[in-house]
Amino acid sequence: MTITLNNRQENFFGQEMTIAEIMQAKSFHFRMLVVKLNHQLIKREAYATTLVKAGDRLDIIHLVSGG
Image 1 (cartoon, rainbow, N blue to C red):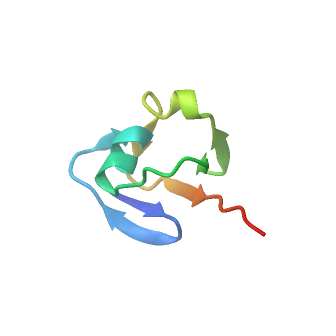
Image 2: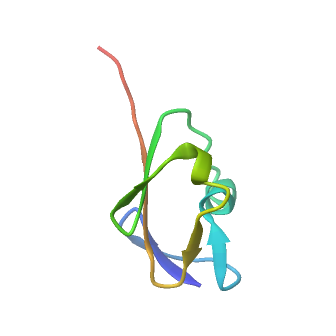
């Protein structure tokens, strides 16, 4: 499947994957993340059950704090 991940076209094996599977495949293991699927905010507890399909837009933003 081909999706838009953080404004880039990405290809993954299969027809659909969960957000958690995509995060694992891309090694996104940051603590503070904002995740949007097709412009809808997704809560952390839904990452393992929310499916991403071909053509979807997924934004995974790593929040950084500091001073």
